[in-house]
Length: 237
Image (cartoon, rainbow, N blue to C red; front, side, top):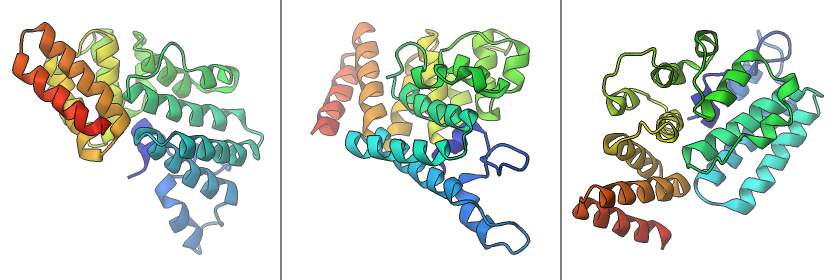
């Protein structure tokens, strides 16, 4: 599973589109009908995946090293728009872990060179109400959540909507957007907890278990609160 997949963007070659699909880099390089994939793409792919996994599993030192490698690989192209996308991936992981406070600083420094899809996604990560035009250029996996935040989608069950999202990081990003907008009830939080737990992603799991415990305590659900705190103790150990 590519951690970049949740954005819905494809890393494609410099000849035309965005970036080539991260997991397809080696395949493309092996196809005689395709030109070899440049080293910078494969290096950026590997470093970005490792950095995101390290962040989600709470390995700060590895995360910092791999992000630096990813930045160096992307900077070799002289394209600030590629660096902007990488920063959005990093902020998406922070958002999924409820750790994104304020604007996505790394992206904001590169905003002038970002395209419309990246600008819309950055606003989405802040749970801003997007215009129809912005929603249209969002990654497909996030459009339903964005429409809900904008009030242009039918009410429905937010937790059921999230459960239909196949990519776990996308699911957590959507849950985080709902949470920041005050639309994440216990069922949404439970989906987020289960998602982080299934992936073994320590950082978002701690964040969502804390929310679950606090929500349950406030609602007088002592059993659920106690269960969440017991799970927190296990993760922390």
